[in-house]
Image 1 (spheres, rainbow, N blue to C red):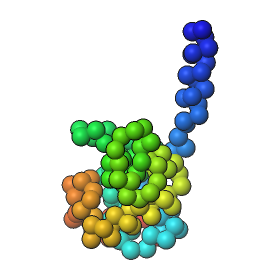
Image 2 (image 1 turned 120 degrees about the horizontal axis):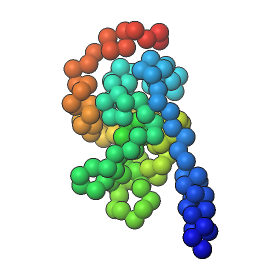
Image 3 (image 1 turned 90 degrees about the vertical axis):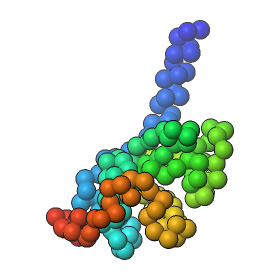
Image 4 (image 1 turned 45 degrees about the horizontal axis):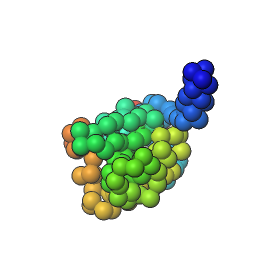
Length: 144
């Protein structure tokens, strides 16, 4: 019985493996540009650095009980569904797990929505703390 439980646990862990990636700064800038982020690219890259250290599989549990997911740390209470029974507004209409992989398309879509709803970057504490004064020179070493 114990062996069956252990094997089942290992199978379940294997099924939830996250396809994550840690980008380099310029690599992320190039990927975001390829995906159509052409306005304020330096702000997007700085936010990813501040929020997740460029890690698409990053997660963080907040003091209020919500969690943040992915390279931009999209919040489970307001912007995605954690699918674990916790209350959520799911403003971006995706399960939170969608933001933990290397497909940045849905992440970009959610951040664009948040930028519209908040009229800027005020939704991101990491951005406010570390990126508010950043200029386009932040990406000066990148070949874009």
